[in-house]
Image (cartoon, rainbow, N blue to C red; front, side, top):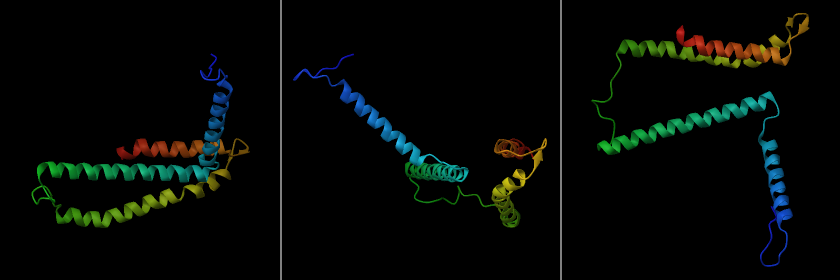
Length: 151
């Protein structure tokens, strides 16, 4: 398809294709600047993205509850809608939850150190490659995700 200017009858297709090419090069340079180049950067970007998603979800939930209260004409939490937990449940939560979250955090923090442990292992006469280590981590996380709720 030939594109011509009606005023001067000049072929403008080369300028469009060069502009599109320049835009594509600019987009690729931006993508290279943002794309993670190491596992550490990938982890940091993933963690930041997950934190952003959680913050948006929390904000959305807060705004929805605020809209519902405004529609009902409530200004604050009513005493009838808030159910208090029995003292025994509160006591159990105060003893159990800090230990639970401490263990979850310790497990999460041990990931980088286990990489070195797996890298020093020998499988079939060869040191573990990054592919094998990645599969070990993936299998571990998937097994926790699938079997964790059942325990």
